[in-house]
Image 1 (cartoon, rainbow, N blue to C red):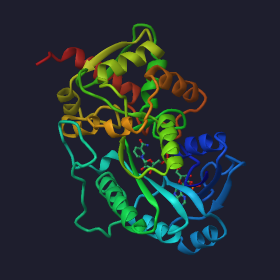
Image 2: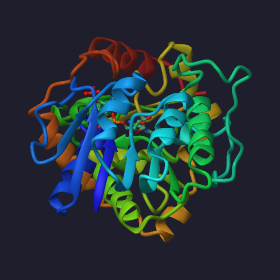
Image 3: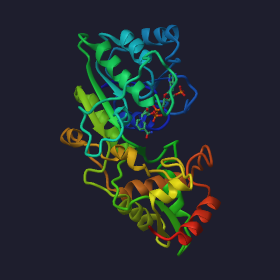
Length: 341
Ligand SMILES: NC(=O)c1ccc[n+]([C@@H]2O[C@H](COP(=O)([O-])OP(=O)(O)OC[C@H]3O[C@@H](n4cnc5c(N)ncnc54)[C@H](OP(=O)(O)O)[C@@H]3O)[C@@H](O)[C@H]2O)c1
């Protein structure tokens, strides 16, 4: 297959590029040359800023056509519209990496692909923030479907949940891996919320393998893409981390009300923890993707591979994700002294 990845040098795209080359596909990577420019000498590197229309036209004019284009780096609909205009008639398949954040908050039961999407009152906004990210991705999805309509290109919209594993720049899962790996014997580890709360995430390599298979097949459609296949609770997830990485650690559960009262930020200070209002983010229905062949590796494999990578790669932005160790100790003391309701 002749594959163009818009991006491809950081995390998910990096796994995609590595797998595609390994499988013998002919790979081109379009990026600015700022991230991982030294990677993948076997790929063709098309250097352009996707926000620079003239530069995009120049690099795309001398390349293609493609069997598939996978777009990992679209955040505003204008980027998708512009790209669709340039690729019309030049690819059989276009795959947009969207997100489960497109869904309107707080569905308490499982969320299928048809659930309501976020909207923006002003669709011209291009500032990407926690407030606009999901709605902008929903607009990117619409721009992809409209932009390629009638061109013969099959559009696949993939909506990943939290993506984890080696090369993750966000530390949201890796922080826990590091936390358990450094726990001394008998050390209490502050763990958040309700042990029975469901938790979902997907190993970037499982996601990349599935995306590549769909690109090869030219599959159209919209798919939620997270894991695991069976319900995983926060308790089971953190116990698996303890078992794989920090056998001596003692899980010390702090209830949501206590943590919120102490001003602990969900998702950032204690990653994977979402408060009840956002519980829908961890109840995404992945039946459609499973039926379309999504295969998810066992959690211990993701944990051990993430740790093997993390021990060689310190956090890019230390302190940006995960609770400060001194604050954790202070909270553990306070939690001990606070009677349960
Ligand atoms: N991480 C998660 O948990 C999560 C969850 C759900 C969805 N997602 C989505 O998954 C995608 C994954 O991103 P990733 O970082 O892993 O992908 P990636 O393809 O590994 O990295 C991003 C790529 O985009 C390129 N890029 C960025 N801005 C560009 C621009 N203006 N013009 C041209 N190239 C540009 C970067 O290279 P240069 O810097 O060299 O340009 C880099 O190659 C994103 O769309 C994100 O919204 C992520």
